[in-house]
Structures are given as structure tokens and as C-alpha cells.
Image 1 (cartoon, rainbow, N blue to C red):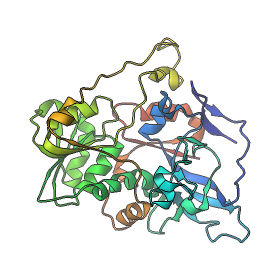
Image 2 (image 1 turned 45 degrees about the vertical axis):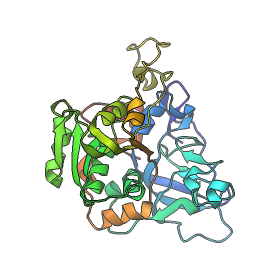
Image 3 (image 1 turned 120 degrees about the vertical axis):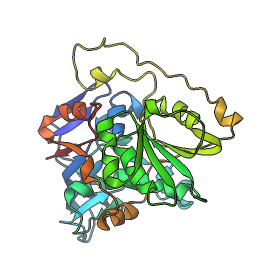
Length: 344
């Protein structure tokens, strides 16, 4: 079986991996589309200390389910929640399965991911994709669900000023979701060609170097994917305002970017990544609420796509094949690229 595999130091295309065997209650899935996420790139720099097959955004066909009775999911087109949980611990019993004490996470923590010819996931994690949603859209279900989590964590009162900081794939999804609320929303980023998409959606946008840090925003959503994003967000949000942190980055001990993505000769093998010091005192002085936000509701994401409320297809920058391997990761890491899709 082919798969894009990370060994803790380098990502490579492996062609010698055995086909996965679904455990009891698990489905064997053949992916139709896979999406490269910033988290995949951060894993290649040391985030989560993960080794194995990368990838967690997918739409695929269920080949089989290891259950006594034939599952109605066999042959169906599905997307799936990435957290695989025990359903026994205090978090699961308390209604917070995404924070299961014993969870594994698809392509992120102790579970091989989707950048492969085949992968497995518990059948209970799967949702059938409605016929009206095509594969190019369905593959965005996981990041769109993460964007849909924000309104569930915020109480929107009046008509707040909201800045989505970051013009990448997640920032653009969060901006579209937030713009459906009773709020004045803008996107602040560094790439004019990306921000131009906001014109299509009627969302305000500004370049970062044109925006003053006046501490006048009610809510700032940090989707920069940068360790420095929080510092910028603290300069934008008003006293007693709220920052929603969607960014996950590798620690300072992470492998250099070029080395991790297999670009030889561009960095010294043992060169450490540079840490970014962050002054957290404004959180205390200005009584700012910092809200971590991670996975979200898949049904809400599928419903939004089915109703045409969110444009995801415009975010696709390039399509590549699984056989392109690590080159797909490198492409996704380029500044002007929003979303790279991998096809079998």
C-alpha cells in the first residue's frame, strides 16, 4: 500500500506498507479526496510527536466494516470525526468525547491517517455525505466543522466587531461562518491574492501592515498558524474582549521546515527552530478571555455546504496525486497556496 509516512524526522512516500485491517467496530475506507492541513505541516516540524501515516481531512468510500451484521455504511460515501474515543472515561461520560482521556486522533496522535490507499476509522465516527455535496466540497467537512465550533463557544451580543486573523484555509472558512452571525466581520492577512476571495463573499478585508493595533475589536479569531499570531491578536482586541485561538504550532524544538518536508541541502540537520517569545501580560492587564477552539460539529458543516451557505471550492489552489507524495506537502506550504487536495 502507498502512504505518505512521517518517521519523526522526514516525510516520505512509502510503497511497502501493509493494507490496514479494521478492528472490531472499525471501517476500512478508500479515500476519494484528501486535504492537506496546516496541522499536517506542523506535525512534520515536531507537533504532537507523531509518527505514522499523515492526514485527517477526507471523503471516502467504505469498503467494509468489521461487525457481525453487514453495515449500511458499506459502499457509502463518508466523512468522519477524527477523534477516536473510549466512551468510558469521565470526559466521554460527561459529554466531552473530543477530550477523551484515551483518545487517538486520525493522522495526529497514535493512529495512522488518510494519506494512503486505505485507512481505518471507527464506524461510529462516520457520517454519510448527502448526494448534493460533491467530493471537492465534502473533503472540507473537518475544517469547516472546526470553524462551526466557534459560534458554539461564543455568546454574540449586540453587533460585535470581529477580526479573523489569517487568510489561509481555516481563516477563510471561519470568516464565512462568522459572517452569518449578527456581527461585523473582517479578515486581516498578508496575501492580497488570498484576500481577494473575500470580495466574492462580501466580507471586509485588510492587509495586516495596513491595520493599526488599536485594541478596538470585540472578538479576534487567530487562524494565522503562527506562534506570533496571539501577540498580534492581543494588540487588536479591546479590554475584556475575547480571543479565539485556532492556531496549533510545533514547539521550538521542532525539526526545520525544509528538513521535515524532505528538502535536502537547505538547512543543517540539527539546526533548531527559532522560538517566538510571547508576552501574556495583556491577558491579565486587559482582562482578555482566551478561548481555545478545536474540533466541531460535522452535521452543521454538512448542512452549511448542502444549503450553499459556505463556498469551499474557491479555496482549492491545486490538485495532486498520492503518488506525488511529499511534493503535495511542499506545495501546501507555499505562501500563496490556500488548499491542496490529494487524489488517489
